[in-house]
Amino acid sequence: MTTTATAPGKIILFGEHAVVYRRPALAVPVNDVQATATVSKLMAVPGEIQIEAPGIGLSSSLAALRADHPLAAAIKGTLSALSISRPPACTVHVESTIPVAAGLGSGAAVSVAIIRALSGFLGNPLPDEKVNSLAFEVERIHHGTPSGIDNTVVCYGKPVYFVKGMPLEFVRIGWPFVVVIGDTGIPSPTKDTVGDVRRAWDSNPEKLEKIFNQIAIVVQEARQAIECGNISALGPLMDENHSMLQELGVSSLELDRLTAAARGSGAQGAKLSGGGRGGNMIALVDMADADRVAQALKSSGARRTTICRIG
Image (tube, rainbow, N blue to C red; front, side, top):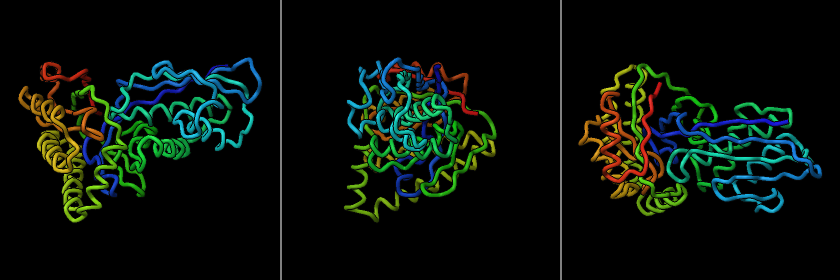
């Protein structure tokens, strides 16, 4: 018996970092990259679970991993949710085409894929709400104080308007649009940048609250533009959001160079996406300009580019 589940990557269009402080953010799934988990029956002693994740060089039994290892946490959380203390022996094999620590939701996608594959293998597929809550607990390991947006958009696979602690709202795409994702190739653990922003907030809450409020206005305007199909309004809003993220100190020379290269080659707007200081940036483009913008990003140092059609 074998059960397989996949989960997409994600990009944040608007609102990163401010979302941790209960401001809204907009995020969409990226199906061009995916995490895949396959659970297979293992001829061994019941209760034995073997984990194979060749992409990160991991081959280990569940028992040998630390309790706070993200893959172990996803598996143990699933078993606990199903009240199973001694599962049938099995192998959990994980593959992912999502770059790690790049702002594309790699950790959340792997967690969601594991939870769905394992619960399905055990004959009790968990509902989306439970998958989402379990993945969020794993996100605490990855990010310290996560907003919950990564696991939410990855779990439901739909564009979301997300406010921490508030009911989830899905976003209707009034007209399709295209973004080019440019990867700096520089790992940037979200936990680090979130922690730095927290320390900056602690030292000057008035300044950062003002920036967060400005970001919230941009997010609300962007949602209205997306749902109305007013795509031309999104470019300037991306530029505005990037400027605010620079003010928060989470951009970098590499991200600023790539956003400038995108604008200079015809993008309507560009910004970093995710934790910052590395990882990814996104650029809004007409489809006719997508290849040119992607090439300009590569010429300016992007490790890889992905052209995504949203909606």
